[in-house]
Length: 180
Image (cartoon, rainbow, N blue to C red; front, side, top):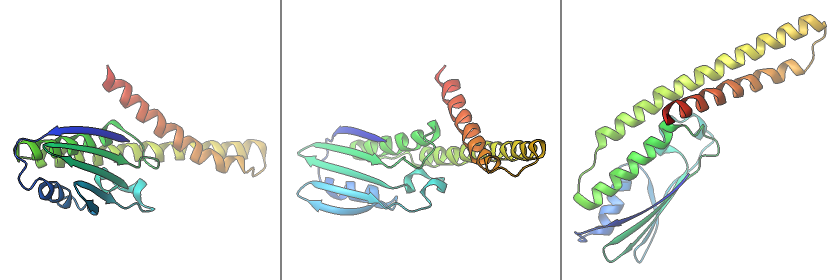
């Protein structure tokens, strides 16, 4: 996921420090600070796909400060993620908070916490559908082996295939339902 924003700031006193403080409160580390160009990074790990807080995923945020303009480019690694509307909502709320923090000094952390909580609940639902699909795939593999009388390796592949199918179906169903 990649998002770019431009913010016009009226109060430019200690603007660089404000930007650094904002990301620091979310444990997103400053990795580069050169003449108004800041780079923040959240490192990736093998567990990114299991993290229920999208702000903990691998991400890189480039911030450029020129006079009273702040240009920010948010690059989030979503390759191992489900890419649900709830995950996108967390990042959008985070970006909105960043914008509000720089323009009027206020953030809606309660809204961000609520959005993260909603994301956690929805991920559990999605994992439930994946487990249901795995059970269906396992049962179909078992039935296939009993009907044919051989232990085919095809039955082992049915489990991840059905888990992925059910998970993908549920994600697309929610996206289409909310688009209406």
